[in-house]
Image (cartoon, rainbow, N blue to C red; front, side):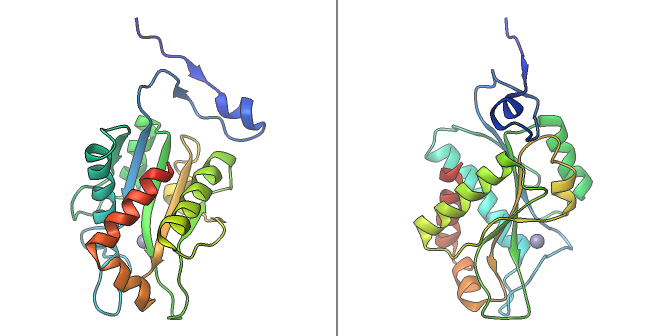
Length: 204
Ligand SMILES: [Zn+2]
């Protein structure tokens, strides 16, 4: 008989950190990937027309493909969108509330009116320990594998983080700046996007 036990692992291990109700009998780690934007919302745009919504969707789909092809479906991965459609922020978080994944990763690209600024960044809502562990692991791996410039995780009051924080570790990953020509050129190459996808997946 399958018995589901709700555990408060996080509070036991990390004292005052948030506790998440997850089944310890789940066979596979559940990951929800949220490719930001979509449809009429392109997100940020590089000077030569590369759209954030396309970059992040391709990376999310590549992570699915790596998981299946290389890792023999080690993880149970769900996407908030798998094509070029705009999903409301509310519906993105509904999936999280329902599945209570082991981690929720919202994928984005950055943009700023200063073309020299570059690098990957990760936001967490309130720096809870588990979210920070994922954030640091991903940033370290991106730096080691791909020599990506990375910054320390920051706190960000984003709706997808605010509304998911009670249900799972949640991070918002900014995969470089489309306003920086080196990073937008890098992200414009599908092989590079596959490498990014693999690096993120292996860091989990
Ligand atoms: Zn974005």
